Length: 311
Image (tube, rainbow, N blue to C red; front, side, top):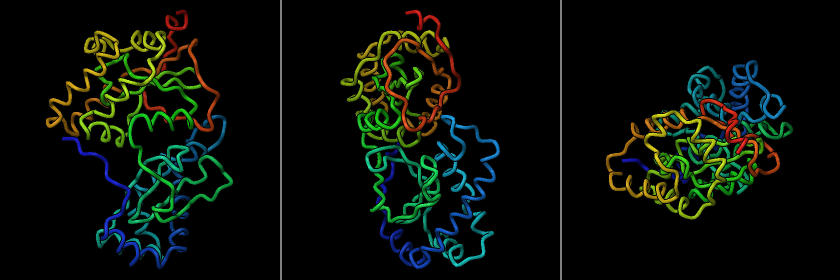
C-alpha cells in the first residue's frame, strides 16, 4: 500500500537530538555546509548548462541539494571541526537528515534538507546569486509547507513557473498519478508531477485528491490533447483509447478499488510510463509571461508537433 508523505514536524526524539548536538554549534554548522556546498560546486559547475541564459547555480536547487544529501556522511567524515563531530554524533544517535520538497512562503517550490528540527537550504542562491549560499533556520520558522493537494500544486506552479494547468484528460490511465497537464511560456506541454512526494500524496489517499482536481480543473485546449496523443507511443495510447474527463475520473475510482495492492513497484512502473510520454510543443495555445525560473522538466524527449501546430 502506498504510504502518504511524512510530516515536516520533527518528533520529540529529533527535536531533542537537535537541541543536544546541533544548536550548540549552529554558527559552525553553517561553515560546515558551506564547505560541503563548495565540493558540490566543484562537482556540478563545470558541466552545468546555463538555464534561462543564466549560469550555474541559477535553477540548480534540486541538483545541489541532492548532491549534498548523497555525500553528506562522506564529506562530514573528512571534516575536522566541532560541527562535523556534532553532526556525526547527531546521526549516530538516530538523527535524521533528509531531502525535503514543498512550497516556500506560498510563493515557489523549494528543495531543502531537514536535519532534525532544522531547515537547511544549501542552494539559497539558486535564484538570486546575491543571497548567501546556505541558510539555516528552525523548521517552524522557515516558511516551508508541504503541498496539500493538486489545486495547491497547480496554484503555485502557475504563479512560480508561469504555466497554465489543466486536467489530464489526454491520457486518463495516467491521470490518477499524473493529473495535471501544464503548458509553459514556450508552449511546451507535459504532465506533472513525477516527484516522489506528489506520487505518495496522491496515491496515499486512494487518488481522491486527483479525482477532485480532474472533476473541476479547466479542460485543456483540443490542440493540447491532440498534440500529446499524436506523439505518444502506441502501447500507451492502447491503454488510453479515449480522452475524456469521465475516463480520467473513472480511472481514479477504479484504482481505489485495488489501492491495497499498489506499492512502490507500481509507482516505479507508472513513472517509467511517464518518462515515455514526450514533451510536445504546441505553437498555438494560451500561455503566460515567462516566469522567474524554469520548471523542472522531467519528460524524456522533446517534440514539436507540426500537426498540432497546424490545428
